[in-house]
Image (cartoon, rainbow, N blue to C red; front, side, top):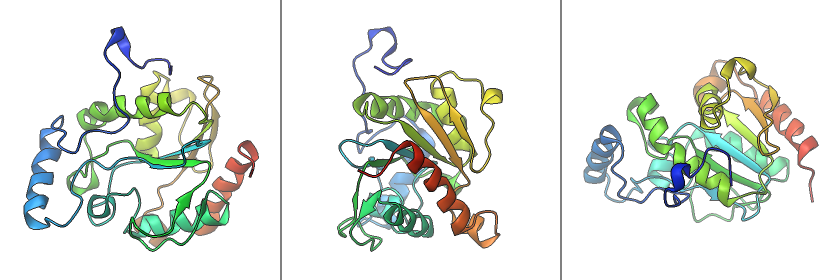
Length: 225
């Protein structure tokens, strides 16, 4: 059991929210608006995606409007997914062909992908209460996958959320691209990267080489089978 999970003997939490989750009114309102505008989209909390025995958990911020919120699979259908899955394929964390749709042939190996907030937030900016509301699902995901040894936080908010989940002081584990932190909790190591968004790559804040260097570091902890 992950420290901090299931406090006070509360019944166990599932790893993913229900499709009709109502914990965050602002996100529910947006979801319902989009269900009316785009009834063929997924428009629901996006479940985690990955191997049944992952060593690596990749934590993003939240689903993108035309990415995971549309397709129902993390980082699928937007630019961030193009760079993420290309890199995962190169480093052996995935196989098949990524075609930006959930029924392509992409399969993850030794890895799982989730988001700190499972529902699409307005302007891609969740507020603190929404991050907190989704925290039990992050804990439940870790509880259900004891094989996880490495966490890759895509961006500062994902980094901070993970530290807060375990009650760890942010000052002891400052975010920086390429950062590597031994957390002292359940033998977990936290790796940091700037988010693989189009904005970060277009501005040069993140290059493909910078992103790949983080995965190369992760491979020193989780070797290829």
